Every structure is written in C-alpha cells, then in structure tokens.
Length: 294
Image 1: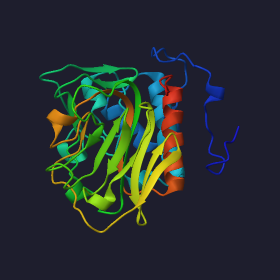
Image 2: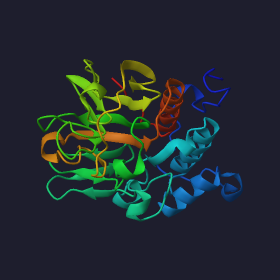
Image 3: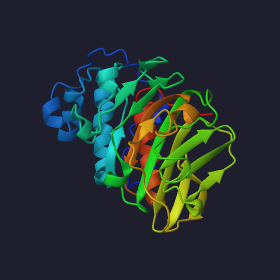
C-alpha cells in the first residue's frame, strides 16, 4: 500500500510481518541478481562480503529508494552495519572500498568489546568506537550538513556526556556533535553558541537525524521534527574525523553503549528529505527484523 510520502515509493514492509530470512537460507530470490540488482548496491554487497539473502535484498531496496528519493547524491557515507563481522560492518555503502579515503570504518576496542550481530553494531563502553575517517572541515560544508543514526538497543550510559557520533577539537568550539541521552538530545553542527539545538526528550531508541539547511537547524526523531533553531554564520567545522559511539576529541567524556542499525553523514536535508530518509532507514531495518523503538 502506498504511504503517500514519496510519490508512491513501495514500502515493501508487508504490514510489518516478520519474514524469517535472517538465517541466510537460499530462497531463490537472487537467481538473477546481477541483472536485477542496482549496480551500486551490488558493488557494496560484494565488496563487503554480505552473503545473507535478506540483507542483500534489503540493501538493494534501500539503494533504489535512496536514489528515487534523490538522497543518494547527498550522502557522504552510509553505514548499514551488515554481515555480522567487524570487516563487513565497516564498509560505507556510498563508497564501498577498504580504504580510509572511502570512509571505511576502523573499529577500536582495545579496552571494551564491540559486538557485530544481525542487529548491527553494539559499542560496549570505554574507547569502543568506530572511526569513519571523514573529516568535517574537508568533506562537509558549514551550514549545509546532516548526520543521523538509528539506535535499536544498548544504553546511553558509561561516561559523563554519553554521545552517539561526532567530532570536535575542543568542547563546543567546532563540530558537528550529535548527543542523544535520556536527559535530552543535542545537535551542534558548527560548535558556535547560536548553532546549539537541544530538546528535553527521554526516548533513546529510534532514528535520530540532525540537519542544518537553508539557515535552519533541525532535529528529528522517527520522522518528526522535535526541535529547530535559526542557524548562524559563526563557528567552524572540526579537523578531526567523525567517530561513532563517541565524539572524537572528547572520547573519554562521551563514550556510550549504544547499538546501532544504521548511520549516515550527508549534506543538509530539508524537512521532506529527513522524512524520506527516516522512512527508508525504518523500512530497511524492518525488512531485517531489527526495528525497535521505545
């Protein structure tokens, strides 16, 4: 049934019925895969060594949806966290190559373990982070950027200011920073005081998107705008790479124990764009039977 949001974009969710395919059994769905699959989806699936049928199907549907919604070219990095191994979870859907320049994640778990499961990646405490190698100052444009993360479990505890992803050189002097915790949500795109956006909201699972576009900073949860503010021309972008599981530059103060089923970094999203992105991430995770929100 058409959802009415995306010019009839097929939602493919079958009313949310669990499909039971996550064990990777062959069901004949992909016999003509190279003919029917999007070329970019297939490149990612092969390079990341994603072999579970439902993960291949869901990824292809995601890429087709991103392109149809005109979001694909806005992306700098998108991490589906598939394959249930450290290597497979590290690949960037948008540029699926095993290099730092392609923003392939390096996971650091010298102190605390990181878990790679069918639900995604779970960070488990101090210094368990993923380095994307994406440097905001050289890759993003101030006043026209976004980042998002789908949290489907874990806890936002462990440090003084548990965060989900971001990059700074020093506290609140640059960015972007994206902090989600039980006391509130914070998105700081440039580190400048007027660019600070926050909302008191206790939910810590779901899809969170922060964006600055057309002079407005917006924060979304599950497709609904929960806060906005007027952007300013001040501030700067960080010269440190973005990390997931903590904010690079403040790792010891911001590490968390989140479990994530997707994350992205992109140019700025309009409200319509953010709603579309939310829908596609939700659809993707529902197909994988890993959609959870509270």
